[in-house]
Length: 65
Image 1 (cartoon, one colour):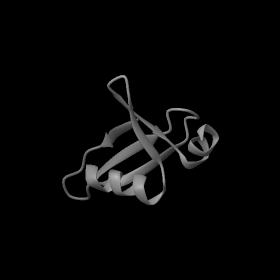
Image 2 (cartoon, helix red, strand yellow):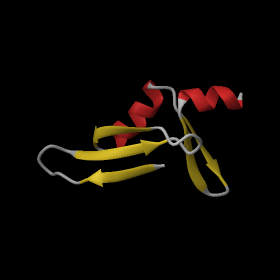
Image 3 (tube, rainbow, N blue to C red):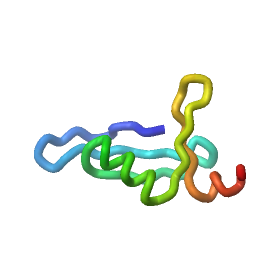
C-alpha cells in the first residue's frame, strides 16, 4: 500500500510504502514518482490483484517465487 502521510508544499510530501504481506514499511519524501522510483530501485514488486495494487518487499517477494 502507498499512502501519503504528510503534505508539505515547501519540503515535499512524505509517503509510506507498506508491504502487503509482512507489514514492513518505508517512508519516502517527494512526489508520487519518487515513490515509484524507490520501489523500482529497491526491487519491491507491485502487482494488481482483483483491481487493487499490492506491494511486496524484496524479502516477501523472494518467498513467493
